[in-house]
Amino acid sequence: MVQMSSGRFAKGHAVTADFARQKLFPAPLDIDFGLPHASLVAMSAFASIPSGATLKVEHFQASVADDELDDFKQLLKLSKIGPKTFENLQEDALMQYGISRSWLEKAKRRWESGYDWRRAESHINSFPNFITSIADDDGEQYSVHFVALFSERADATPLLLMHGWPGSFLEFLGVLDVYRRKYNAKDLPFNVIVPSLPGYGYSSGPPLTKDWKVKDMARVINKLMVGLNMKGYVAQGGDIGSFCGRVLATEHDACKALHINFCIMGKPSDGNDLSKVNEAETRQMSRLQEFSTTGSAYSQEHGTRPATIGLVLSSSPVALLAWIAEKFLVWSEEDPPLDDILDSVSLYWFTQSFPRAIYPYREFRNQSLHGAPERYVKKPFGYSWFPYELAPIPKAWVEKTGRLSWHRQHEKGGHFAAMERPVDFANDMEDFMIHVQSEAKL
Image 1 (cartoon, rainbow, N blue to C red):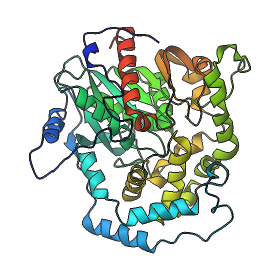
Image 2: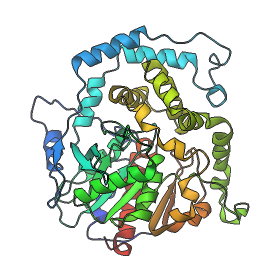
Image 3: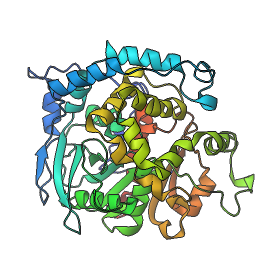
Image 4: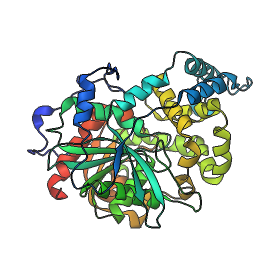
């Protein structure tokens, strides 16, 4: 582990586990949008678009229309849960049979009564949200939503955080909360950009007239960063965001460094040499085997029949809940709070983004970008290992995919690392940024 000092990243601001609880909302903010509030002042302080931006950027507010919310509640109430079967009556067989009927009944009851989407919107809107239109190389226009914490420092380093499926920008709100409590806009050492990737959440896309791939996603995201005058940025990604990050690092000069927390790949030629794999890595590799044998059917469906599954899950909120909730339960170290899961599923439902978001799976049916020779990362490269990741790949394997210069092995955390362990994740990103500051000439 590399530790470096820097005037930009003050050591006096160390984040500890006592600073905030390791969950999506480390410390809930008491926000009343009808009254002046310190949180609103803080939000506005982080909301100044950097000078030199060429994109026309508008402020964005999450808000589902009342009639749409009423329609959703009625549809949810009328949505049936399937009949009892041997498989769905097994309470402790999530890895063997999938979501249980009793869990789904409980979640549906909560979604119908007690759960408050307006609370989720208030939390989203407590951060600076923006939307902009980006013209692609072929003239196609894409609306891209992003959450950001903009620094007032002229030397602030741009940091791009990218989610995957079934995640969203919501995964990173806990991390942003850590930073906005730790810093103010005058001393924040980086500009943090968290986009809804094209096809996800409040962003548009992919196009209706042609196929689209991760390199297309990456091209639009790079245009976002360059258009915000964020040249010389550090990219971070998990899940599909890690694939996008690898393309950014290998194709786009504005991306100066890459950090990932997901590196699913096949065993390298010397993968049987366990002398370079430590005990924890060896033990947790069983999760990759479980995923490959019993947990990857969803990806085959996404990749081979995207039209079918997209239409099926767009017809019933309960169906969408079952499909997405299973992943949050299986891929996390500990079950996330039910309302956090409902926040994510609600976002997918209200933005109708599930069928728009699964296009990358066609590309990865038989290969992973992480093992492709043309995607070898020659720029500064970092990797955070979380033991309950669905594919906790050993450091020795990841070193085969790029010039790995920073690595940290954690004792806790799973696939949704930023959501599950926001303080740890925030520390990792800050330390990685310190490490690459001089190496990448940021």
